[in-house]
Length: 105
View (cartoon, rainbow, N blue to C red):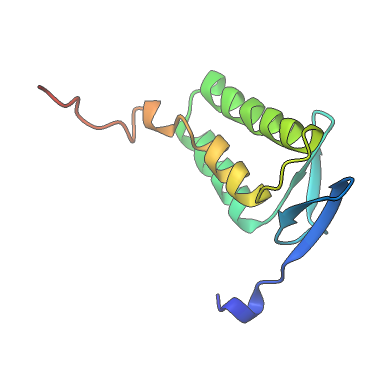
């Protein structure tokens, strides 16, 4: 994907604060929280769900929703896609398929 194919649009959510959203038209509502939707975020969600136990996947998704809600309430400038990917995958190392050997001292 070239830089020319990526469109950037800012969505005003709080007074005098803006939030980076690569495609503001693609959003979804999850548990009452409006979150960005796109091919990368969808792939990350599917990957996390495939690798994680249900409790861990649900924890990661709740973390994402809380991060979105907190960012908006506090009027923080943030990249919504980065927050989505980071929070959804933040515990992926706890899954059996990607955990590595324990380092010895």
